[in-house]
Image (tube, rainbow, N blue to C red; front, side, top):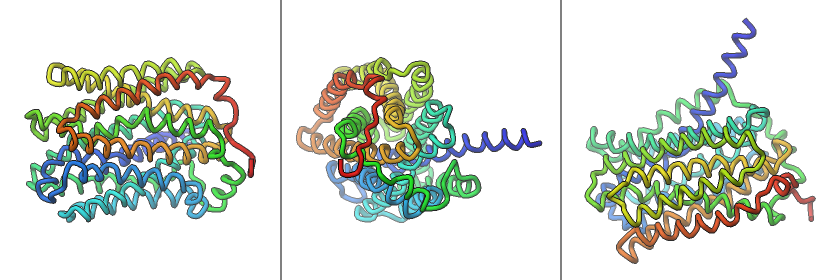
Length: 401
């Protein structure tokens, strides 16, 4: 009986990890396939509508930078619950948000919720799955990306069924509600008391070290293509004559390969302490995919999108593992993940906005895809820095150091 209870509890922990991940990207990816309808009803330009993707990411970055303080005030259990409640509230508001200001407000609200959860999950994983960190990060990353792809696939169909694009955005309150109920009944390795979180955060200052800043820049640039793809990939193909549903399905197809990479690459990473070969493969896949979108977009669109998806999925999961490689304790993971994700997401936030600006300026998305190629190739060079020996050194400086 005790063995059965333990097995059920372990299964429930894994299921909760998946459900949490599924809720972290629909707030972004549900917008893109419906962007033309949204722009037609609200009068938003390409550049202004880019804020629907950029604002949540900016909010993710700012809240993540304050993540340890939030954790210290409300605790991990209440922090994740608050994040899910904010996502639920943003989706509910989107049912009625027919104007640009209300949509932008929901982007901020949902982005804050996502940020709270993203900051706390690495801490929870390091505590709940201490001997299976790579696998747990892979499952979390895969579910996060699956949520984004599912939203891109389902949202335009829901909107078409109800003839109401707000329904396609608001439907994602359902999984948020499910996750909130599950979390409250069985919090994943969470510290309940705020004081425990506050004590855990004392005395560590990763933002004073060059390695922490390098990790933040690296995390931001190797993952920034995802934000541009989520914001603009469907619009790119809609402009070439594809329907909203078909272009959204292309984003969902990309997600399939993100999920595969997020599961496979961490499993391979578990066999070696050197992350550089797998990161190099992942960055090369991204670069080839972006070049294909520029040169032969209609010849083999699924091939290019598959390469991009594989590269992005692998880079996200491997970059999280890279962060934890620099940490010895869960409290260090919380500090470093907060800083790296916070600063990294602020870098990410520039990507959809820059893509929209270049689209307005040049009348084409091609220049934006070339910018992504340059960013990825630059990070391919930087990857050489992350040797196992250098990763093993602590990035934490003493107070005042």
